[in-house]
View: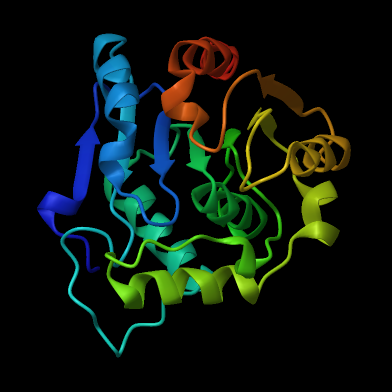
Amino acid sequence: MILSESDLDVVLIDSVSPVYIFLHGLNNNKDSWSNWRKYFKIKRKNFIIFNRPGYQNYEKDNSMKFDLSFYVSLIDYLVKTYIKKDQKIVLIGHSLGGFIAINQVLNSRYTISGLILLNSFYRFRTDKINIDSNHEHWSIESDLKLVKDNDFTSYLGLINTKVIIIQGKNDTVVSIRVGKKMHDSINGSKLITVENANHNSLLECRKMIVEQANLIFNTIK
């Protein structure tokens, strides 16, 4: 597997409690979860955070295809390597990371016990993305193709796990309508609208989001 030590942040407090896997979005990296990382360490929770290909320490590899099947294999690898058989798994994804997390729930060989979607989507028009020209082009291109080639509209009703959807009311990248559509389609899901938050609600309203995330933390033992 292509993950280097510097691209991976693993803290395993015990071999019984749930493990939380964090997935960052486009044009971002694992450091975007820094405040969550501090919270998890203080609360003595198990977590895995990693850089997706093309972000920070990766070199371009033309032999690799970074599609959704790649991420299924990558997360499978992390689960097999670090998580005990009876430990429960929660995926927390921001934006494109949530898109990848939805695919993981739909295609995983093992049970995902919880899913937290922050400003995420089930399909996306790639022409709406404002790309930072200073970033590595190949990673952006790979992510855009991943989104363009996939649409989970018809599969949301198949998700059978605890789901919290957190959407910024002022999000100009992913409309609040997207969160409402996911909420309506995923049985038993909870939708939280964050006032005065844009697309980076995980940074803008971190305290409130952590409190809401505890709804999952406290029910998954």
